[in-house]
Length: 270
Image (cartoon, rainbow, N blue to C red; front, side):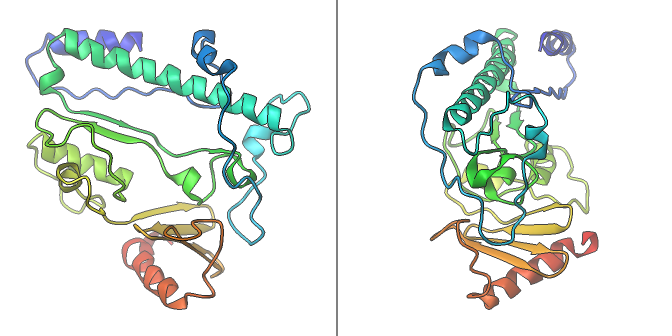
């Protein structure tokens, strides 16, 4: 962050428009952050882990190998609730630390008089299970692993501070930046500009496609379908049981519609 703050100073001295990308490592294994960021969580009760059980059906569940290779002092968070809470507190400390770094960047824009003329986008590359479905890590095609933060701030935003549940993709960020900056959008991009969603946060957005190893998934505003390379399918309804029940056999019509959607937009990569 010190270097990023220095770069902002240099860019501010130049009259030309600029783009600055800043990577913040935390939260990331191992979950370490300065002690002061852990203090707010140290003795505070935290909510129980939702749906902590391993799925009883075939899925992209895994044994949390990346997490389990770290020193755990012989403890397993899937059976030791006290250790699980300790891990989650340290994860929260890492998030607070990352938030503080974002705050430093925004404060520097304010100090330099750039806040009212700068587009700011904050996003994460993936989500992370914190014990949901008995997974501690990423690398699944469940919601916890695929959902990631995305915040956009720009001077002319019509409804600042509003939350949206619209389904979007990371590939949408590039064309969005182009449109907001009045730059030509390159042809043949996979993503779509999010300006409509930004203007109307209550819109449903579109759909999102993700993949990992031998499976692909498509998420709409209601369903998630996961198709494995051998043809096995998971289907989840987020208006009812969420991703706690695979309903693929009961709804072959929905499976076919979503399979066609995957083939149409992601066929070349499958």
